[in-house]
Image 1 (cartoon, rainbow, N blue to C red):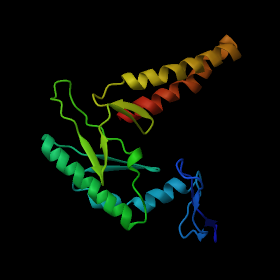
Image 2 (spheres, rainbow, N blue to C red):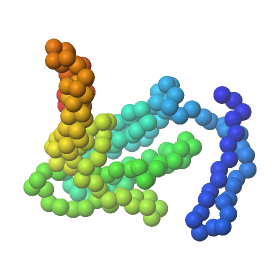
Image 3 (spheres, rainbow, N blue to C red):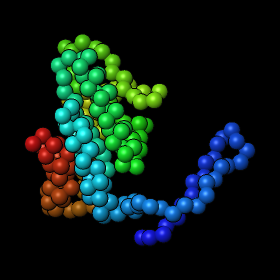
Length: 195
């Protein structure tokens, strides 16, 4: 794809008319939902981990980036978190990318006996509070690392699969279809994530 052009139009609820940019030619592009898109993205960002590796453990997966920071001391944890975010924002800017803070989730894993101390991380007046649960590579995890949220998400999916199987298939084939539709959910979503 070459010589593709785009313009940006901004509609403001308070303005009477929209604002529109001039047409510009795209310099860099990977079509959305393309097969090589996630691979090209990982190739593009693979040196991000070298920037923050000494401070954290980055996990690059398709178009998502996660960072694990460990510390036994809350003050050190906060300092390292800010430093990692600063390095990431600097790297993103140098590579013509933007870190979307609206999609950033912060989670501090803790034991039930841990003292409560809230973590706020942000940049340029945009701060995010820590979350109690989030989705990570298809798994619902929470800050106590139990499977309750994930189980609650899986039950309706498995129930729907069971209903579909029972209503469409003779009893003699149910076991085969259960193995086909339900067992992979467990292996992909739970067992492979533990190993």
